[in-house]
Amino acid sequence: MSSPFSTLTVESARGVLAVTLNRPDAYNAFNEQMSVELAAAFKNAQRDDAVRCVLLTGAGKAFCAGQDLKEIEGSYQDGGQPLDFGAHLRRRFNPLVSRIRTLEKPVIAAVNGVAAGAGASLAFACDLRIAARTAYFTMAFAGIGLVPDSAATLTLLQHVGYSKAIELCWLGEKLGAEEAARLGLVNKVVEPEQLADAARELAERLAAMPTRALGLTKRALNKAWVESLEDQLEYEAFLQQTAGQTSDHREGVRAFLEKRRPKFSGT
Ligand code: T3D
Image (cartoon, rainbow, N blue to C red; front, side):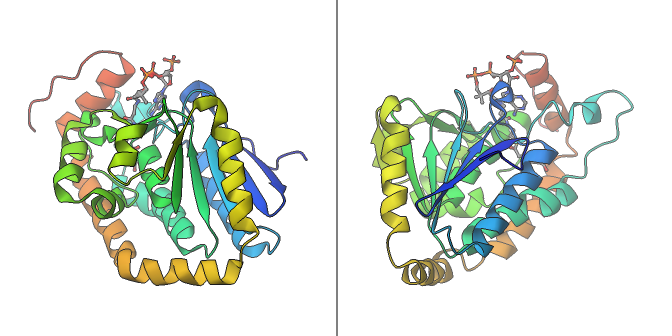
């Protein structure tokens, strides 16, 4: 089946909608097109009764490297128009996270490689995570002078507790799949070559279960767990607006694009 999307491949079989982020050269970073298409894929999953589970993964080496920093490069050049981060989040990332959390069908992330920044947030927003032993997470936000977004300040906190969450958010160090499983952030770790089969097996098992009951269970757990999702998404957008105006954010992105270590001034 040919994909209606240019940044994703989608395949529907045996009740499972398999969605693959497909910008491998950019480590599947989110550009405008991919955000729009991923939201559309989840909208289709909501409407299509034949879809009873969504399986999300990345093409190539990475799961997802978060916001495509090359797409917004122009904002960091002298005379460039600064990005309105609040508006950017409200338009692009927040609706996507809301869609995943309100889809009353299981959503599994098969984390095949690095999940960084909003890419990590995306994985955390899914219901279950199955990861390759070589995969890792990094809360890359502080590395470019930003605040975690796409609900990571809520989901990560709930998954691992405050102490670990703030350590991961501040230091941005690599969190390997096995350590992530030990913390309860990942449900299962498998060898990289087994990931696709193991994830599909789990997805097909869930797709064959009573979808309405599973969906209502998700709604009940959401009520207890992420009842404040919309407020938190809005609050993150507000904070990102502030962080996005700092010199350190500008320096962080420039340093990434110039492949050097950033020199932060604290302003
Ligand atoms: O409203 C808003 O937009 C705010 C929202 C922000 C949400 C966010 O996600 S902020 C966080 C953005 N993401 C990052 O800061 C992560 C940046 N990437 C990295 O730190 C590293 O690339 C990784 C840790 C992900 C992987 O490291 P490594 O050494 O395995 O790979 P690499 O060599 O750094 O990257 C491989 C290629 O992917 C490279 O391309 P090239 O130079 O070989 O042509 C690199 O530029 C590209 N790439 C990786 N991440 C991004 C990216 N290109 C664009 N945007 C990226 N985020």
